[in-house]
Each structure stands twice: as C-alpha cells, then as structure tokens.
Length: 188
Image (cartoon, rainbow, N blue to C red; front, side):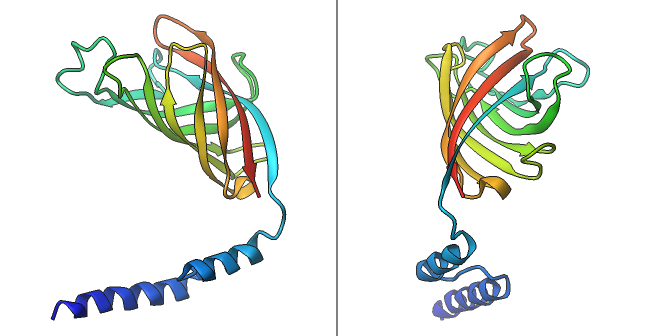
C-alpha cells in the first residue's frame, strides 16, 4: 500500500520534468548542458560598490528578528537583517546605480563580530542588466579585507562560481557604510 504514493510522486515528477524541459537524470542533464552551454567558461573580474544605509527614514538594511539574548551579546549574536542595498559603479554619493543587493544577514558568531551573508545581486542597468550573482559566506566585518563565495548566477553569469573580496570604503557611527566588492568569477 505504501508503494503507491511513492510511484505517484515519481510519475508526477517525471511528467513535470518532461513538460518543463527539465532533464530527469544526470546523463540527460549533462547532455542538455552541452547543448545549452557549448562555449568555454570565462573568467570575469568585476568591481562594484554596495551602499548599506541604516540612518535614513527609508533604510536599506532592516533588523527583522533577534533572540532575547542578542541585547546582552557583545557580537549581536542572533540578530537577523534583510537588505536591499543599491549597487553602484563608484563609492561616491550619487554614483550610478547598476543593481541591488537583496538578501539576509545574520549575526552568527558568539566570539567575533561577523556576519553570515546570503544574498543576490540583481543587475538592473548596464552591460549585465537582468543578470544575477549569488553570494554566501562568513564576513568577519572588522577585518580590513575579507572574502565570501560566489555560488551561482543567471543571465551573463550562468553557473557562476568564484570569490569576492570585500573592503569597507567608508562607514559612520550610525551604521551606514560603503563596501567595495572586487569579484573574480568563472561562468559561461
């Protein structure tokens, strides 16, 4: 009797895969990728700036959750924030906006002031308009130069992977900051 639900799920998954063109096996995926991405991989270096604004009536970084112990924590352990930060071509105010950094930041260390970051940069202008890059990693915020992983992308950055080096260009006592992202990635 228990085999029927498993067979039904498998059957539905197979039909959905066929209907939407999603390869149903590793072999089929490999073949499909060969037809979609016959070009060789490229290495791209991108430099852009992310502006984190907290002190205005319309902040781009907002706390959405905190543990009861966060208030007493010297590292803000347990604080979770969401971001929708502008991505610009330069560090100066008024620099051209080319995208948005959208995602989640969590204070995830009891021992150091650091962030766990999971976010996507959505390019909205310029050469990479409509493309995305996804980032995940540990950001030891007070370290001069730190790095996080590039774990994916779409559009011009299909199947991206790489590393971005982050440097704080400017910050103030209100928590506003500008970060330089110097990224090296491999993609199709």
